[in-house]
Length: 439
Image (cartoon, rainbow, N blue to C red; front, side, top):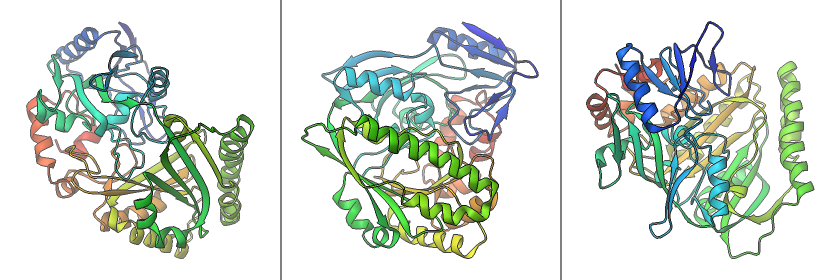
């Protein structure tokens, strides 16, 4: 086992630059046994324990001043069961590596988010999701989990084995144990046809139910200070495969969406008064296109421009009104918002603390360029989201606490009772969990 002792300058930081922590120790276990031993040793030394993936959460969900476990050596596929339609993968595996490995085997997840830099355990533990009419978050595709609990024992769970743990640990926030392996449902690889096109915000909001009903995966980006959106509809296709051309893909996905967009963000941060004009140009920069490819090449895209993000899940039937209120707030304020607002959906699921638990859901995500003051915008947005019974994404900026979540989640007490049983001494506690789950 690789062990790194943190010194004064050995500081862990997240991807967005919003969180920094100085753990007393860091370890990179090469096996489940080594990870379990590290947890037991931390208990002997009186240290709290947290595991961290790629650091893509904007909250301090993974921060600790105790033992920080890095799962980089716990990667790769353990087993593929084609008859059962499952794959078991080690917790530190990046989603990108999993998607590519599954594709080589002629397999795929049913749905996924729009980036794939996270580890499978980090992504599922915080509720990472894509968009889908019928298919839900990555965590909802989990069929089994293996985790190291507070006493260093290894617990496996599924719908049949430790089902109460399975119901909660799929989105467990690292509060119930350290995930070491995940079994996902997979299916034979398929093709998706993506249709991307500009559309006015008025068109999208007036036709939202129609667009949601007619497409397996629908999402859109609204550019504040404009009435413009970019929409994306993904649907299964019999083929043939027609991927984006290499040159066209580089021009739109790298040059425009990352390179030019990065320069625009710098300009907007330096001279905020230019943001509305930049937004008008940005909202019209991408042209309509249609292409057909395997799932991860359609669902995901590179995100190289760094930002800070808040995202709330509201009841799907409330999304249009919520978005209209957000637009009115931005229009009437002196805020200058240079990043588009992203809107996605998910069907209800049965995971205890899933943002879609028990209700059909729509997600509204607000972003600000890294280094730009975001507090006023996020505060105004959060006030609107919470008025519509919003549930914040566990890995993105929010100010909610355990009292709020106890009212927002009907099964919140079920989760905290399970936490009391599995981690009575709060070995996996940190300031974030203390705030959102209680002491």
